[in-house]
Length: 331
Image (cartoon, rainbow, N blue to C red; front, side, top):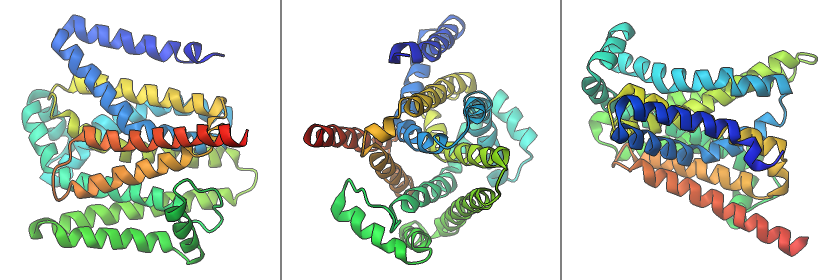
């Protein structure tokens, strides 16, 4: 199947949804939804590469569920329900009341969500930082892209739980430079991010030891991918309210982006892209680390979401170019 045929359905669905926004809400709303789609794809392109690495080990049934059940969870769970829960916790208000507020007074809901921005950035930043560090701090890793840095990080893998130590040092350093009244928020959010990562790693490791339990193993990887998607989406959800407070426009724009990214993930898997493009996975994890650092820096100073997206895209495109050069040089 050629590339165009592979993305035909996602593109048709995306165009249909954007056309619906144009008919019901006008050209301005359609433009905003399109911008949100671009923002989501840019922020999550590296997520597609990392997801493809996991999906290589999943059977076709769970791959299909990742694109069907997973997209429902991604759109309505990570990008709609989860922010409501976060606002509910930070505002000490029942989730149902926050839901009504989101539907009836989206401006006020957007203000409350923005007030939770520090907690969200600390949580998402530390979770993504742990994902990247887990990849680089590995003494069994022999292929390096940024060799001077990656070789030293790989050697640290001989030290038990070195990536956890590095992650906690990063969190502690950030907590010292944020405003004093935000220190506890940053520490709590960051520690929850680290603990969630360790929890998901523990479940995946435990189920990997259970022989003959393919369904459980597929479920563990599915949950890990959905958790990773949540961490990637949080920054985009908060950033979306800078463009509009209309939940329908936000859901359509971010939802289309999530659907396109998942389709891109399956394309990578079916075409063996990670095997052919030697350094693409490295670039994706550098992009994840870059996004994590910008989210953590965002607890100190505001960083526009487009900057975060461009940092990630630069790493991915750089690794792609290096891979092509390697193929040209080595045949």
